[in-house]
Length: 277
Image (cartoon, helix red, strand yellow):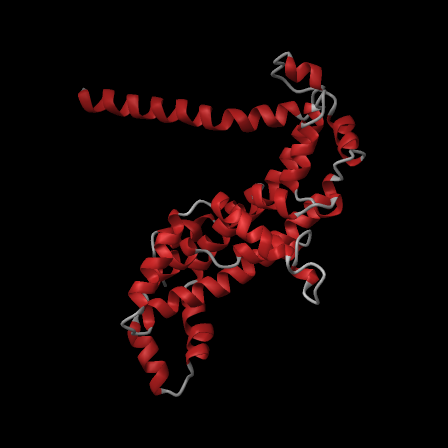
């Protein structure tokens, strides 16, 4: 009897938590079909303003769809570079033997304790010095000024190193005996065997880049270079925000992350558990 009561309580708790978790998404979907005045009044049902809100989004001064393109380019390039660079670093920390590597790795982990806000001023000065030089394309108000600080993070290096611990070292030794170089081992053996780890790393990096707000706010100064979080922020900063239009933009901005997560969900879970097949 106690077991049955405990089971009922467990499922009841899970149902309540599921409703609490899904409520913001349901509110968002319902809100995109209503006027701002109805949303403010707490209307919790489907409306008939979806097309009107979508047209308002297209004609908005925030230039949302250009921001969507910028976010997609930045997130995709950041994810690709971060996966290759961070996985190579994590692989190297685990596979190669060195007396100094543990000290370097410890310093790397300590850097995770430094908040990003403390690094913004040095980053701003560094990228601002590139403006007016042959490397101006990497300076402030360029996509690369947002991409470069994110292509190699201490967390991602740590993540790949921890997953590399379960990688069979005998494969590396056998490949070396067969005459494969270190880069060939990495690209032809390690990367295909670590697909789940790369899938998890891709989801984490893409979501972080897609949702990044603080640094793009500082680095991207031209309206044409705005990302989605900046465009949504501008929509909400007006004296009378059009919440229906904003809800449409938020739903569209959520779709890429949701699709990527659900497509790679199985690999994400296995990668987070450190499985290498």
